[in-house]
Image (cartoon, rainbow, N blue to C red):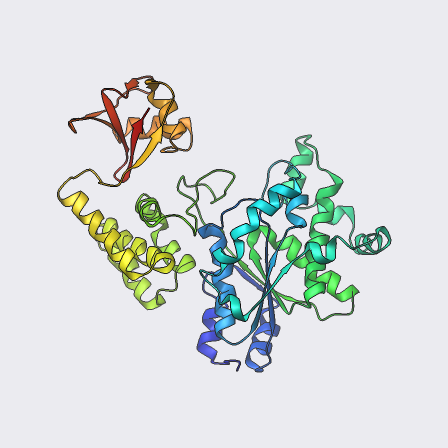
Length: 402
């Protein structure tokens, strides 16, 4: 049964949403009681689905909970070709074997959010690999080169003299054909996908299908303040262990707390408004962030695990104890420069971040008796026979072993 409650439809089309095309038409169709086909495609360019990608998957679940048919497409073909919608340079083609390896757990990861048993799942190689040159020529005739190169990031690359391959021009057509193959009524995607999503509408018109409506979501920042991206390693992944997931969320910049609540959880919006008021009224952001970390860990690991992580955090900070279950990292050299060590152990993402953390006094080294000292210079050398625990910020610890 399709649910047509106006309040639920309003939240569906506003929470974590940047734009709806065509909003009036989609509202009318949602209120009609007809079951719609809702499409989301993800290219397995990384083995992990991260919280940034969870935003459209959560929206897919929202549609599913209203009784609509959701269609999850794994881009095994488009993943090889590569989408450069959000890139400042050409994305290289990936090997087919790499894509196959990456997508092994995609259904299980998506199943953390959506009901897989009630979902259609496809791989777009099933239809894209069968297209002929004649069919592709007809599809490319729908669009002009000018339409493609007028996109901001493509225009920027051309102005800078960077290469733009013909392969990149074909990508939006491939994504658009996915919509034809599964007869999509609605397609979901990030704001960086807008051109590709609109291409689907034009192609559906050509193939005498009703043009799909579009729901775009904003992109969220990762742990370093840049857009969350597997390429930059600043992600929180759905299959992250609970300790790392909790710790990463607690290290998030305070300014992103409310955005994360709205976009990557389904905590009631009225409760989130209260959290927002609390933050404005000088409540310690750490207390609200603790609720965020609890909620996200609960979503992917369950309530008991989430409660345990909260207790561990409070114990660690109130009693200033070192965590008992620190990750161990094996290195070859007994002595390493701190700037190299932090990047090698992934406690920091870049040398710039290392310098920033050291300047803030946030990098510490512990000896085997748990005596601690602050690292004050990026060129300091750590001898792991003397100091074998490194801390960055309040929550990141690692034990170095040979």
